[in-house]
Image (cartoon, rainbow, N blue to C red):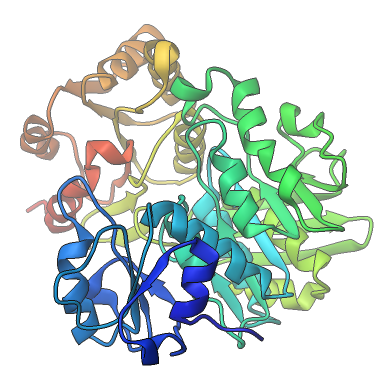
Amino acid sequence: MSYLTPRKIAEITGGEFMGDETARSIRVFGAVRDNRDVKPGNLFVCIRGARVDGHSFANDAFESGAACCLAERPIPEAKGPYVLVASTQKAIMKLGGYYRSLFKIPIIGITGSVGKTTTKEMAAAVLSAKFSVLKTPENMNNELGVPLTLLSLDESHEAAVIEMGISDFGEMSRLAEMVRPSICIITKIGYSHIETLGSLNGVLKAKTEVFAYMSTGGTAVLNGDDELLWGYNPSMHKVTFGFDVRNDIRAENVRAEGTEKVVLDIVSDEGRFTVSIPSYGSHLATVSLAAASAGRLLGLSDDDIVRGLLSYVPVGGRANVTDTGCITVIDDCYNANPNSVMAALTSLSELPKRRVAILGDMLELGIQSDQMHREIGAFAVQSGVDCLICCGDKAAFIFEGYTSAGGDSGHYYPAKAELIAAIPDYLKKEDVVLLKASHGMKFEELIPFLNKFSIS
């Protein structure tokens, strides 16, 4: 296959090569934006951030082995070649799209309002039973992270799973134009980013921009339990997954075995088989169906899918379970919206021990925010939470909804410092404690305290 050189980078981006002529044809491998991540041969992308300007670290990147830099202003006394462009952000997107076009491998795009990262991880685990798979690292699912991920493709990869996150109209088109997925999974149309997208129909419109950029013969894999997705026509082959019997692939006999694993039957016209997911949360059943659907489309056997799901490992801040010896902590505080909080409370309700939920603000919900927080409080009563602790400005409405629905074991604290001081009053030995809030609430700051918590 073709490979990148400073000459090719300048050609694709419309930039100007700067440096020794002998360096025009050196080979460039991968791309990074942080000079501390540079490996020999990398392209270092100089990004102007709110606090840090990557151009200031260009020469540090060269010293670490960068083959070339992509910059939007001249680099004084540059220690290596670079390509000067009007915008490094726009240039890296052009480069990512071009580089992806060099690979004739199946690429699975993952989007939706909830569960994108979990679905990405599980789909990659399933496909890894048969293929060498590239997946989006961590949460690099935006207009910078996606092209950087695509640029890390190499000849060893036989498939890729790319997460695509958006918050406004037009973003999905820009991402999908680079990714050109052959299979696209949409997890759910929910209330994430409702502040900018306006309504659930707006979320649907924004997410489904992807289908204009699918590769020829592509397949849409959609959550058929979601009424908007069930009724949506992507104008291509469509596979639905979920619990409802109308779906092409569905889950039956779902059972959580404590916090250690979830077991279910995967059922379709092709038959039935049982899978075990070594992780916490019955909500993982739906995710496993999406992953299994992608696997089947790419020719994996039932045994391959079983083996792949057994290898699944959750990522940071997403339903990670820690037994401290005193309590069990469920760290699900990476992000939150009404759909994901309800799913987390449902999974918590299935555990046999005393259940404590510590909930914080759900951000970016627009004018419906207060009411959505109240509904979460009422749902906490329905789900049978034994103790609800709310923290944050908007979380006051969770507490209000909880008490209005008849909850009698709720507590509210405006700030985390007050919450931490009060937690010992509410926890008992062997409690299961769920942490859930939007990322901006920084609930991960509570983890060290809970992990050290003890009762004498």
